[in-house]
Length: 158
Ligand code: THU
Image (tube, rainbow, N blue to C red):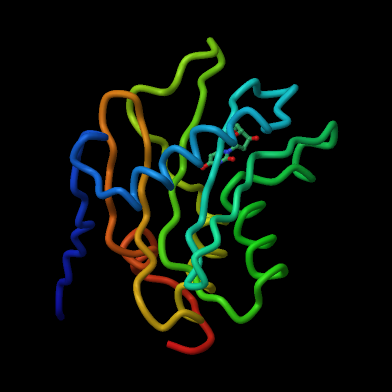
């Protein structure tokens, strides 16, 4: 028998500790929460993806009266990014959120399982880690790859 413990590497930082590029992406994720369509949960999520061609792609959660038909911010951004720029690879994704009371969440939220799986596809395509930045007002988490958020995963090519 072999026992394996998997550790998720997570760095907790403040906004002031981010690089200029990281700040730009965090600002983008925060700003696009305004475009969220969340009449059911009133929880507004924004995602911003930095691509290898320098473009920043924005996405927000889009809900639906038939609840499961809605889509999270991360997948809205990811699917648009790869449909708009199929030759570019993902470099960094930032996720921010506004709580039901209208203020920014203090502690970051993490992508749901379906978003992790979808993002992992694009990380696999990129052939290198896609950095994940999870944004809260009090603290920001930096996670070095999507794979570290979904360590025992199904992929076609790995
Ligand atoms: N949501 C996201 O967009 N991203 C996440 O990482 C977590 C949850 C959305 C889905 C739904 O519209 C709302 O937040 C409440 O769950």
